[in-house]
Image (cartoon, rainbow, N blue to C red):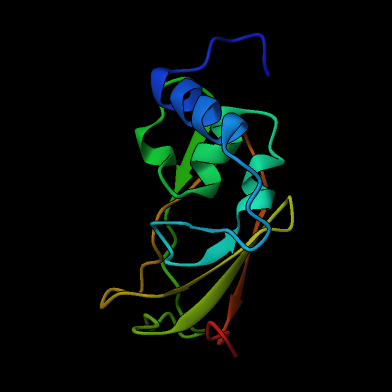
Length: 128
């Protein structure tokens, strides 16, 4: 935990999953990406903020003033917008998320707790 008090969402999320029974094959979903991941991974986090971020509901978190919230526009070398293009994002903690740009070449918004590097890889289709 940090020295700042966590918001209600983070406290409740941590409280639920900290006490949740061990289910070896249990899975949870990141609601933003639709990706499933092991419940044990979620339970391994030491803060509600980490859990909320992993579950894809960090946009509702109110406990940090240090959030960075970025969206990117992908273009080719000529400046043409890359519409409907598959991409993969790798965060500094080696988590991956997949997405497809919209009609204006925009990615979804990515939120990090503080300044963190985000790497974008083009052409990576989820499950490929």
